[in-house]
Image (cartoon, rainbow, N blue to C red; front, side, top):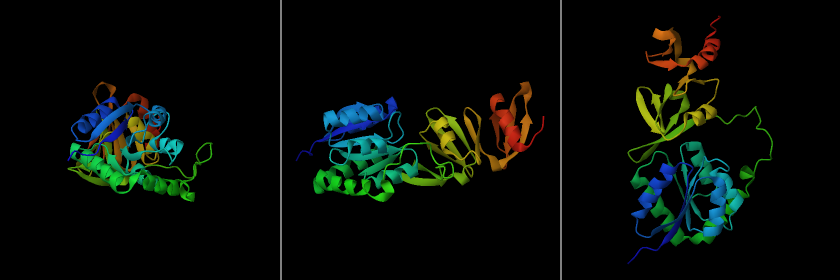
Length: 269
C-alpha cells in the first residue's frame, strides 16, 4: 500500500542544509518537497502560497526567526512544523509553540527520517485541526504572548545556558559552564569540554553574541575561551600571542582582541 503523500516546504538560510534535507526526503516514500525558502520572510510567503502539509523550519534566520514565522502565519494556516535548531533552549521554545518535532544540528539522516515519520503519523492520527487547536492554545497563553517592541531589558539578558549536541542519534545537552573553549571548524563549531570534542553547526559570531561576555571572550576570529580558565598570556615568535588555559591548552589570540584580554587580566601597559 503506497504511503500517503506529505507535501513539504524546507526553510533554512544555509543552502547546504536545505539541500541535505531535500536529498534525504527525496528517498522517503510519500515525501514531496514542494519548495525551499532561504529566510523567514520567504517562508511566510511560500507557506501562504504553497500551503504545504509540513515545514522543516530553521529557528535562527535573517528577517524572521522560525518562531516569528509561526506567529505571523497563525494557527489557522500554519502547517505541521519540525524545527531545526543548534541550541536546546530554542528547541524548548519550539515545543512551546506545539511543533511536531525538532532536529538539533548536526543531525544524521536517520534522525531526520524519524522526525518526518513522526510528523506523518501525527497528521494521520490527529489531523491538522487538532494540531492547530493546540497551537492556538499555546500561542494565546500568557507565557507566550508576543513581546512589545523596544530594546531588550538589560537586567535579564538571555545568554546561553546549555548547548545541545547530537551524537550517534542521541541529543546531549552541554552546560556552557563546562565548555573550556570553542574552535571554528568550517561550517561547524567545536565545543571542547573536559577533554571531549562536540560539533554544532553554528557560526562563531552567533555563539559570541549568545554567550555571556562576562564568562566567555572571543580571542580570535576562530576561537572563544572561557575566561575563568585563562592562566597566562604568552608572546610567541613574530609578535603573535597565545593564551594558556588551565590544563595546559594554548590557543591563539589575534592582535585586535589582545587588548581586551589584557584589560580583563589586569595587565597595565
